Structures are given as C-alpha cells and as structure tokens.
Length: 446
Image (tube, rainbow, N blue to C red; front, side, top):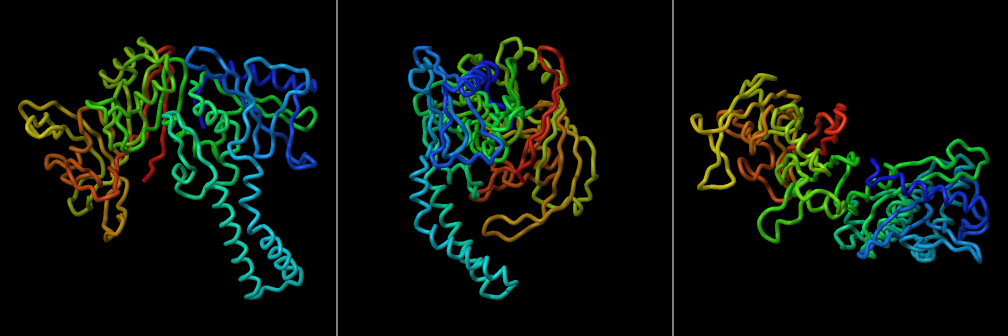
C-alpha cells in the first residue's frame, strides 16, 4: 500500500535505530527462547508524532508478536517511546491453550496414518476435526485485537475485517505505531519502516519499505479513516467508500466526510482541500489539495474538462432488450428540482448540458440479499462534464437509458443493506506543481 505519511524524517530515525542495534546499545529481544533466527530478519518502524503542545515524540517498534526492543543499561534515547505489541504474547498463548494439546495429538495421528499411506475416512475425519479446532483457536486470537483509530474510537478487528484476516495482522510495525499514537492523541507526522536483516551483507538490510499489502492494507484505512492511494506535499488521492460524504454538510450529523477526515490526519492542510466531489453513495477516487496553489490549478483542470475519469456501474436491467448501442455519447440537460431537492429534472431550455460517453461491458446476474436474482448490465461511463448526479441521470432518466443504477435511492430503488453500484475507477490529470501525468486506478468493489 502507498505510505500514508511522509517517510524521510522517520527514515533517518530508523537508520539511527540500526546503528544502536549494531553497536549493542539497543537489544532486539524475543520472549520465546532461544530466539528464532531462522528468519531472514524483522521490520523496524518509527513514527514521529506531535502532542497538543507541539512536542515531537519518536515512537519506535519492531514487527512480530514476540519481538521487542530494549535499551541497554546506561543508554538513553530522549523523546523516544518503545511501543509494545497491541496484544501481548502471554494473552495470545492463553487463548490458544485450550485446543493446543488436542491439535498436537491430532497432528501426530494424522502423520502416522500418512506415513503408512493410509487414505481412509478416519484420516479425513481427523483432518476436519483439527481444522475446526484450529479455526476456533484463531478466532479467539482475532477477538483479542482492537485498534485505536484516528477518530478516537477503538474498533475490534472483526469490525474492520469482515472476512477472516491472515494471522499476525496486528503485529506489523505500522498498526502498532498508529494504535499507540491515536490512543494518546498524538498527530502522526512521518512514518517509515526498514528491514533489519540477520544475514551479513544482506542487500535488503536497512532498505525502506511501505506498509505491507497482505496485512497492513487490510486495517490501516480503517484506522486512518481514509484509504490513501497517493500522497505528496501538494496533493492526496483517496479511495472513498460508499456512504461517506465528500465534504461536510449542514448539521452536526453531516460533519463526518473525506475533507474532515483528511484535515484530522493532516492538520496543516488548507481549509477547503476538495477540488471535486463524489456523491455520498458513490465510491472511488477523489483528489484533494494540500496547498492553495495546487487547489487552484486542479480546479482549473476540472473546470476545463482536462481531467479524464472512468466510472463503473451496474444498471438494473438488460440493455439488449432495449437495443441500446454498445457505446456512444449522450448530451442531456438537467437542473435542480427546487421542490424536491436534491433531485435533478430534465429541462431542455434551462438545464445545464451534461456530456457522457459510455461503453457496455456485459450482462451479469445480480442476486441481492434475500431477493430473486435478476439480469443487470455492467457499463463504463466517461463523463466529459461534471454535473450533479450526471451519471445517475444518464442511466435512469427516460432521455438517457431509462435504466437506473442498482441501489440508486434517488432515481431507482435501494433495498435494505444495498449500496449504489457506481464507482469512480480511474482518474487522470496533470500534477499541479510539475505537470506530470498522474493516473490512478481503484479496483471496482462489485
């Protein structure tokens, strides 16, 4: 995953940690003896964070459940905090203890049958029993993990990851560091991870890494409140989830949004960073600016139509029955229905022109929860303008396709537990400072 915070300052502190370890002033400990050195190495992580008074604290940790860092006697490390695992190993071992003996017994029985090349019903039964016991133990361990998040709330792992995540998901450096920072109301400023190798002259020793895709990418977006696709000193690109506002609305209940979550993570951000918006129900890529100059230049690109976007949608019907062309362009005119906000209505005389290119991908079978399956059409939209509800109207209005997007609560129907099946999958624009072509994708979740 893309590193959510600036890395360079924390990277310098990582190099200092390596020097302390190499000099014997800092010790890498493991609570299971002897220390398992069969691995290639471990990750070291540093997070620089500030408190309410502006003081910078240096949070340091090491990957793994059973690993820890400790300064040797007589050695000081000012302003540094050595962060322990989120769940200690003794608590983990206690959760595993109930089934541990029986799992080992079953393993011995299974190995004995395998040794004799016996492929019997007994072997299958023993394997199934061991699998069930193992899953029971892993679920007990997962239930122990909960993470402090940027909004001050503590969220259990089972809430963050609906499906069973891999083991060790909370034991990487990044979640440990952020969990500690958010627990003590510290604001992250710079975070980095480096590999510390046990092998002499290893080419990976001291190399800078981003948080891992296999574990960290599953929980960090929930801890941060945003999935950061790209970030530098000028801009940030996020993958907005369906159901989250882009900008704050009126009232206390409409303050949770992409903009306010961004400003919470990056307090130095400008007051109005959004350069465009996505409907609350729409998911996908959204671009924001950290500086006023970047904001001005990006807004100009959106206004001129220079930004290229691709959306994916599931339309609630069969295009073939309507004999709609597989691709094309539609020009439509809509304005606000002042008596039924926020709906837009067709108005050829006073409406604003919206231009949309489309491409039909395929017919699919959609099966809602507790509903009969039905045929839907997957479509790619390429909006050339940026009008309110442009794609929803292009799909649902009789002047467009006359087939609403699945889950559209305004222009179609949305069943309980259903979302709007519209996703901003790709975006291309020029970087506001050096005019590099920036192209991003966020895989469609449906």
